[in-house]
Image 1 (spheres, rainbow, N blue to C red):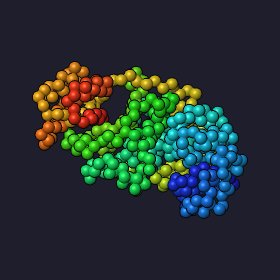
Image 2: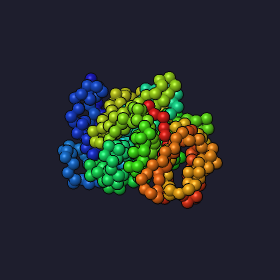
Image 3: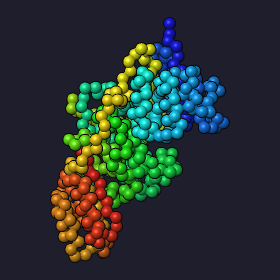
Image 4: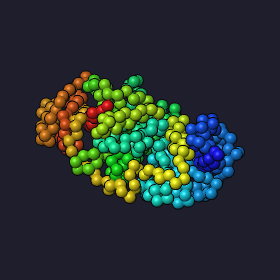
Length: 435
């Protein structure tokens, strides 16, 4: 006898929600064959009942309140695609878990804020809380960290986790355009929101990185302990200088284990143009995982968009459909939520890749001696120093350091600024070893 259909309730009918419904209809036969039971949406919830979404919703029960849908006895799984770290998204997911419903979510903000709390409820009730779509779109990085790398000890995880930023940096390099020009084009194409702050200042990447950190290192999620810097201050001059030095600028999220704790950071980074991650262009995402047994693994693919994210949601639904009553589900974050280690922020230490520093200086006697003194005062060794510029009064000085600390670089740049020799804001970008 065939198993009963898995009844799905979906809250949030934007691009991803409508794509999930469309793909479940198109792939229904294949999914039933793979899972041994049908996956059937039966109810939906959204803010606007009358909006034309390009799909037929007449066969679904409509709930104005997503929390009511989440607790409904008519569904087996609640799919949360509302967004936001609090409000109806949090209330609905919590209500679903407390009512004995499995949950699938694409909400990285929710998980970065309440993930451990929700995991404890899910595990106490023997439920699945799946969230593959919350990080890197259609790339199966959550399943890789949670399941495929069992037995491996992860030392570092990093990657390009925001397609909007990667698109902007790609266009800036390829066409020599300014940041603002590329941002406007990204907004026109729908890659960037009308208010792009969440993406371009690194917050979206930070939420995703905090989830990967918990999975990789078995610690509690700590999105507030991430060093954060966006890409809005990147100029065509930085892009050009990086290329001349054999690098490409990417916004990376980096988490690594150190002797003093865990380091999490999001910032523009120079990676060698010969590296694989430097070849990830446009809205594509990529995640690299360094382990003791496997070595380095790089996953790359579509990081956003209706189909890519819906594919991840449906993969999570298929996992639930294949599970059977009485089966003991694995922990939400790779180890039981109650056993996740407290997050311990690492002490500031030497950065292995060094730093790129761009200074626009007044062309006068003693400028270079002053720069060299400040570097020496902070025990910073320079790999190279390049000067260029046709302006009679202004010169651009490019410094590339050997391994040094963030504190030393920031102190040196602050002292150079106080010396009054700069004509523009200095630029500092980390250089990262990359796959």
